[in-house]
Length: 191
Image 1 (cartoon, one colour):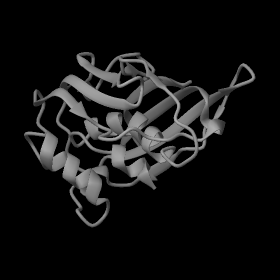
Image 2: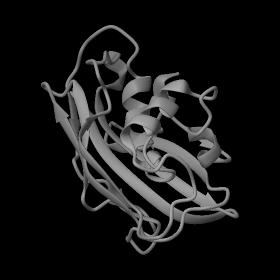
Image 3: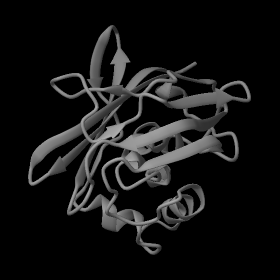
Image 4: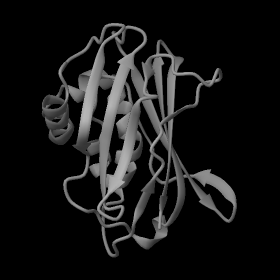
């Protein structure tokens, strides 16, 4: 569905953006308009609680237009070279009755780099990568930086079904040779 729309940014940063946008755009479906309150900071969820592949500490998610549009602002910096086959596992959690439960949105991509560069796989993701980023293809060298100046991830307000009201956490875990190399966490609330 629209979940794929979020997978945009750099080879690996796209995953980070994919985290929340995937959820936002996938729940774009129907019925009522609700406000989206996005935690601006993307947090690491690695065992060492550090960013290991991509530093997104200066990269913010900003909700505007009464929570109906989401923008990205700031920089992504590759701390290591991102090359070869990197897979992504995207999952969500939804707070229900005080307990974090597995969310409705999850997927796995075996070769994320190939996926973002395939105009037939998901044309919208391909367009975003081509428009927003200086470097359009993998690999991304250590030290490479991408800068975003209030880049709109959602050009139009989106509709969210009432069952998605509440607090959410979204995770993007990146793997290389079956080893976890990066984990991003985004928190948001649908109110």
